[in-house]
Length: 234
Image 1 (tube, rainbow, N blue to C red):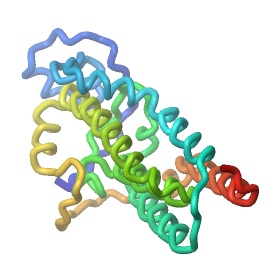
Image 2 (image 1 turned 180 degrees about the horizontal axis):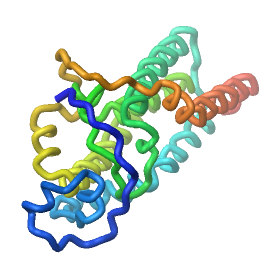
Image 3 (image 1 turned 90 degrees about the vertical axis):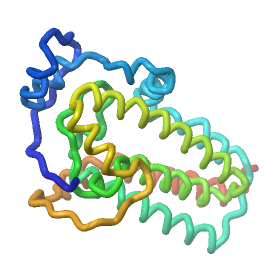
Image 4 (image 1 turned 135 degrees about the vertical axis):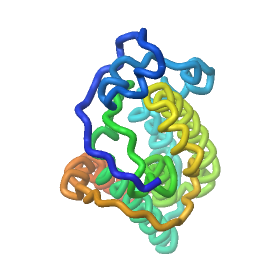
């Protein structure tokens, strides 16, 4: 797709839809988002579970961090280097997505500013969650509890798959055919490398500012893990 769209004002989604579909398609993005009710896709079990996980996603990693802190791990130079590479790759991919999509990526409800199809979103639909997945693999690797890696990979893959089911249903309800066309031409997870043209300029300053809390979390985890290794906490 690789198309650029001007940012739209944040809108609510609590009103019901009473106008015919033809009029909905002619409305500006903010108006379509305001009047679109939950569609059939949002009523499916996977989407409903994903909606709950979406709203609670900041707290979901806590049990995994407790496991990593309570269990003994074997930290080596090689594992630390691999963890660092995964972290840089994951955060780099994530911050590129944030620079294109803006701070709306931190939303907690059914409020959508715009349909983003440029930057990393032009080659696959979920760069932020793909980046998050790599980041959590980096955290597990750095902890040294390497046997936990496949468990974490499976659980986070399932979690993000369900969240994406919910988000896709919401976007389909709001943007209709526009989103379905984008969905049909762009892979969900594995990037499809292709040339794209876009006049949009990524907002790197806004992205770095938005990610500042995330960087502080990385620093806090690093300190905690280093203290754990120094004290040989089992």
